[in-house]
Length: 277
Ligand SMILES: Nc1ncnc2c1ncn2[C@@H]1O[C@H](COP(=O)(O)OP(=O)(O)OP(=O)(O)O)[C@@H](O)[C@H]1O
Image 1 (cartoon, rainbow, N blue to C red):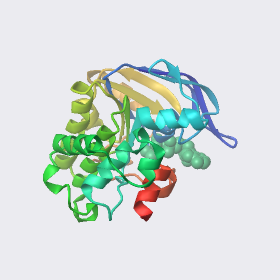
Image 2: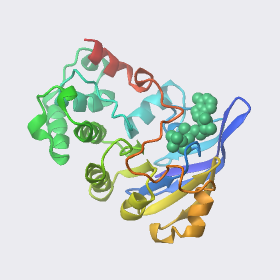
Image 3: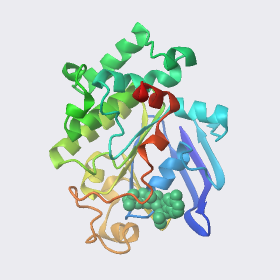
Image 4: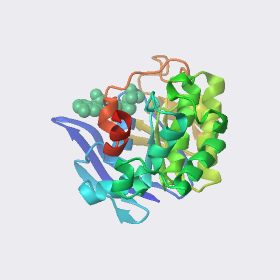
């Protein structure tokens, strides 16, 4: 489903990703582990062109993904993103937040005027049901807990009917019980809906529990690729050369992402229009 070849990302003189090669299959649930600053977010952001690769090729479902206008439209439709800080629109209802996942598939005129066809409303409601939030659909999203907001984020991603979901530390701000619930919904998306899921995590324990395959990243390079039961001490040393003590596996201690983009910068234009209406 995803083929990455020779991916490099440079920020000025600094190289954040060094010739990364990676293949992820359809319906696979892959966890990326790595210390803070290893390049995990940059890798996800290159896949959906929130960050433009400096070199290399990314293919999604057999097609080379491109950062031009038409390429971006396609990637925004095929690849959904879930963020650590949920990225929901607080004053919109839960249902409207989920409906924003449909905007990329609607004719521009309908999306600008927020005319959601009954078919899209039915899809959004079904996605809310899948994350067990259908009973909250009419509430303002800012009345929900953090875990519920993240479930809205997952429902919005599912409503997009994407081929791929990229989840960037989706449970970093959540307690362990809620984290497991959220990771279970993501796992179901891969096992039941056949969506390819790539999930950045800081918690080795969750990677062991949920991942089908683990990719270890250190210093912008892939230093491990294997099954969760192959995460030995020696492998963890490679992934976390500075050791595990500095916080990367603490489930309740989120690390602030140095590249956390302003929320507005990662919203589709139509979603902003919806918010400003
Ligand atoms: N826009 C940017 N400009 C300059 N440097 C950047 C930019 N984005 C990321 N970097 C640098 O690239 C490196 C990788 O950052 P990235 O956010 O991908 O790491 P990460 O593994 O996701 O870390 P964390 O777990 O803390 O979010 C870091 O050294 C970071 O400072």
